[in-house]
Structures are given as structure tokens and as C-alpha cells.
Image (cartoon, rainbow, N blue to C red; front, side):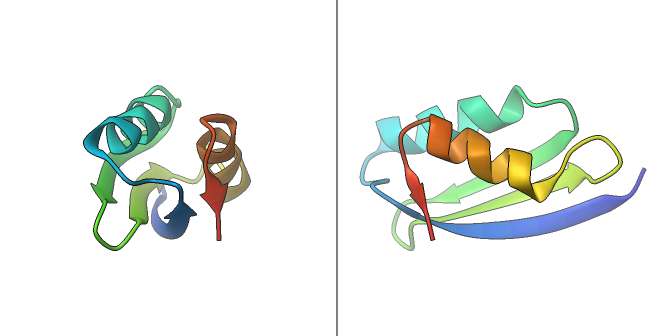
Length: 70
């Protein structure tokens, strides 16, 4: 397993519900190890197995949940 960390700045994440929505969407992806969501900084950090998942898929999943990734 090749573990990687990636961080995204996410616009539109303003409540616990939106943070939970992002976290739930990401944890369903095969290869995600851990998701840390910080509403105050609008930052999402994902630890994942890069052999099973790409950063582009993670970013797309956040966008598919209705948020803008910077």
C-alpha cells in the first residue's frame, strides 16, 4: 500500500452538515484511509492508498457532492 495525503480548500462548506456530507462521500471511496474536515479553515485532508485511488477522483467526489475545490 502506498499511502498519500492530499489537502483541498473547499468553498461552500459552512456547516457541520456540509462537512459530514463531504466526509461521507469520501469515506465510501475504495482506498480512502482517513478524512479530516475542518470547517473553520474550509480544508479537507484525505489519507488514501494511491494504488487504488487518485487525487483527481477524490477532487471529483467533493465536487459531485456540490462543493467547489480550490
